[in-house]
Length: 378
Picture 1 (cartoon, rainbow, N blue to C red):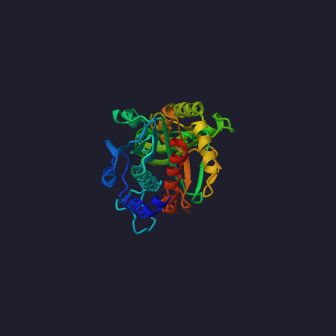
Picture 2 (cartoon, rainbow, N blue to C red; picture 1 turned 30 degrees about the vertical axis):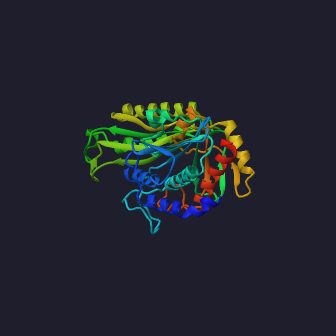
Picture 3 (cartoon, one colour; picture 1 turned 90 degrees about the vertical axis):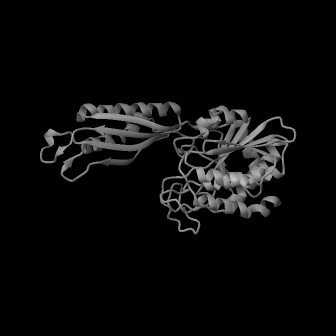
């Protein structure tokens, strides 16, 4: 598409500027303003802010429906180690999940259709807090979103291990049900020389981790995909003091909703069992709970059939993945699909050296523009 190629440099520039100002969920103030500043140049659009996100409506010439494209805009609490000359200017924060790429692609598609309007209306969603605590569900329920409720919705995510111009998706369940887990153990501290007078929460913590890691093996059919991760344990203040408090942080993932609920129950049961074993108090907290991302079967088949006819794309039918993605909330209410776009990075998502190939920006913009023009709208 000649117009996209002529304007590609500014979308790459925008990606780099966004990469320099990564912000966590619901704190994307500079990110929001950067996008709003760019949108001022575009004709025939209506813009609404929602918290730190943005909704952009493009009017069609004779609309019969409204098609949405969503880009997430938040970053991760991670110290960047890429060495790029446009590295993060915000200490301890990085676009390590490719959301800067998502935004650049969305702005590119939006810009193209602002100057080349279609018959139907388009809605572009710049959604905050995908990495947590989850912006999709409250945005979906907002008055701003309901005013422009779309008839179909689409989104993409970069995939580091895939070559540029490779896309993958599947009908039905694509991504998992997920939840973050926080467990606090409260005991009684004391001197290391008198262990009988206290309740050592490092011992309780170690025991709990071993029991939790056995939950999958003893409760879940090995043919059903599920994981339970403990990613962080904190406890103790000194070498000769029994820890009176310990905190574990982790999460669960399952493709099947029933398996997911069983995991939650068994994790809670095992944790509360520690109260009796170690004579302590245990508190279990679940947060950032996301539903499965389930693609509409008909729209996915249509999209994949179209994509396979494009000579510059490689299309793969993906296996289900245990990623978590709050785009699943949109798909619960609106027919649509989620697909991945290869970016050929030697380092994976959430890695401090993640560095996607910017050639994927052109691929992403042209792919979505062509798809909307050739199949969805006309």
